[in-house]
Amino acid sequence: MDIHKVHCDCGSVELTAKGKPKVHAYCHCEDCRELLQVPFHSVLAWDPEKVEVTKGREDLVAFQHPHKRMQRIFCQHCGDVLYNTNAMGWKLISQLMFRKCNENTLPQAFQSNAHFFYDRRLIDIDDQLPKR
Ligand SMILES: [Zn+2]
Ligand SMILES: [Zn+2]
Image (cartoon, rainbow, N blue to C red; front, side, top):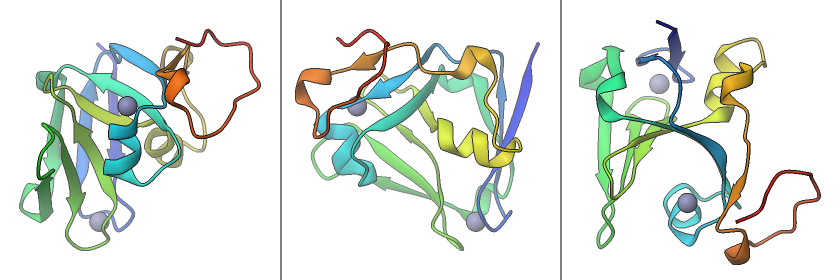
């Protein structure tokens, strides 16, 4: 089984993800934007049991959104967001996090294959991926 490790900017926290993400796409919904302060989210979604904290569990802070079933999980030292969760309880790791920790590359199975909630977008994207 594939093992993938990522860490926060300061190195205090490490995550290990097993297998392949169930969703690999760009999400343009308001929830992602509001939680993460990004124009769209480059999502890698995993079943929760596939992602483990393998270092620095005590350094993680979970921010529960005041009225949405979402959390932002970040390092208390550097503030880097390791992942967020959605209403389904999935763990969503940014593709940027994987790139940063893997010499700026993404495995083929991690690359976005669609845009979700494109009708809610802030900015237009000019690429060939399906837009839903
Ligand atoms: Zn950190
Ligand atoms: Zn979203």
